[in-house]
Length: 284
Image 1 (cartoon, helix red, strand yellow):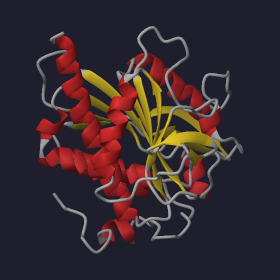
Image 2: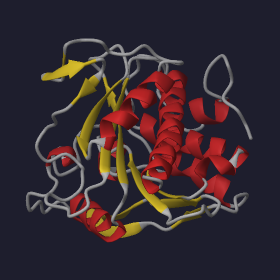
Image 3: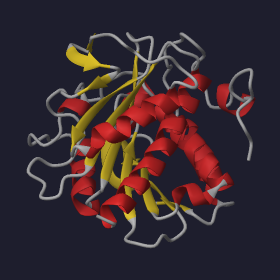
Image 4: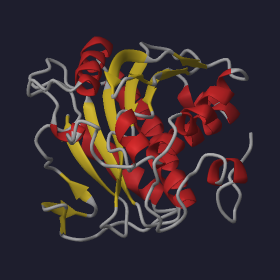
C-alpha cells in the first residue's frame, strides 16, 4: 500500500490529479481525477467492485454516477450495508479522496470491514465538480433536493439507490470553508449520536474539533448538531426501519492530507463501533 507522505499528498494525487493545496479553491476538474485512484485499486483487490449507475446528459455530454462496492470478509451474521456519499457539492472533492484512502486502509487489513458491504459514491455531483462549483450545472444545490419531488437526475438516481439498497447506515462526507474544525450532523436512529462522538474523537488525531455553540446556523454541542437543512441526502421519510445517518464535516481550509486522514479515521471508527453495537444488541 502506498501511504500518504508525511509532508503532504503524494505527487500522483497532488499534481497528477489536480487536487487543491491548502487554502486553494478547487479548480474545474476531469472526473477521472476523482475515480482513477479507486479504479487502480480494483485490479489488485479481491474485495472492490465498480459499476456506475444512471445516465443523464448535460450540454451534449453523457454522465453517470460512479459507484463502488467494497465487500469485507464474511461475518457471523447478516451483511451490514452502509452507503457513503461524497462530492454532492462539486467544490468539495476531498471526500472522494477520503474514500480512496479508506479503501487503501481496508486493503491493507480487510478484517476492518468484516461483515460489511460498503457502497461508495465518490462523485454525486459530476457536473458541479467539472465546473468547480457547489451547484450542479442546472444551478441547483443537490443537497437541498432530496425527497421533495426533485427532477434533478442525480437526485432521482440517488433516491432510487437509497430505496433499493435499504442501507443500515448512511454517511455523508462534506467540507466547510467557514469552519476551523471537524464536526458532524446526526439524524435517524439514536445510534447515530453514539457513533458520531467516537468518530469525531478519531478525527481529532488529525484536526481540531469545532466547539462553537452554533455551527451552520444550528445549535451545536461538542461538535454535534441534531438538526439539518431540509432536503439533504438521507433516508426516505417514514422508512419503517430507518438507518443511522451521519454527516462528517472537515474544515476545507485545512491541509488536504489532514482532511483525508481525519475522514478515513472517522469512517474506520464507525465500522468498528457499529459492529460492536450490533453484537451487543444481538446478545440482549
